[in-house]
Length: 302
Image 1: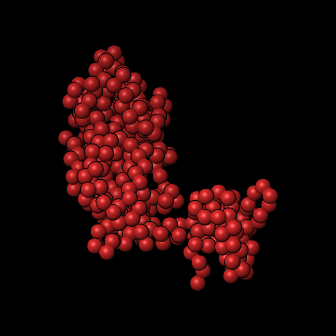
Image 2: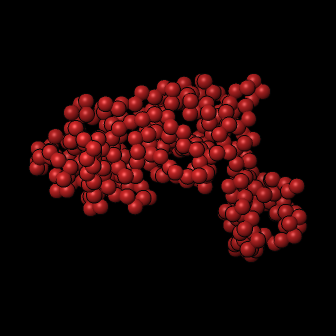
């Protein structure tokens, strides 16, 4: 059986192109890294790394090994760290990706309470609006406001929400009235950007569907708050979940546009999901995180 530490050492060197950097990441001596990889190469009967005075590169065999273990080792580590403590409490490191604005509204206010409930979980919370690759980026779980169809992942529904079109009163007073989805074509649109080819807003009413292209919108960004602030300042029309805009709607800072239409985007649906690997479906720490937060969210839908 091959030494998992040797495989971790090889993975660190292959990813960083440096023995010294791998040693720093693994908190051990350069000589230890070199020894472990040499022993691994002897066991496999293959040269895995090409060493020079300036760089380290993988051989063909090393590249193949890297591709095979780069996702497997994190799964092994996750399985081990998912084991509960001797008292039966969920424990270990938990790396979570959440949309930035969603974290402000629904995660941040509950973090201290979560820690009191599960003091043995070490939470690493990465909050931004990027669409991360859960497995490749090393996350245990991601909270998404859209559904990801991926055979390697589980998408557990946590709730539903809806989207609204909004703009400031200042903007609406200075531009033509909007009474039908086709009117949006002549307005200033601002859209959320993700790595997707779909650039369309979908509006539905009485079984009729209307598609509005955002291909030529003047602002596209992957940061929800930038869209919100620009809309409040009179920059144009945005489409976002109601929970992120409810306070501004209540204060009159934003006005709902075409309120009698159901709206969404072709890149989203109306669900909120926890995304995680099938191999982690029994993870106590993931279950603790998901159940704790989902049970306490109060998400505006009307």
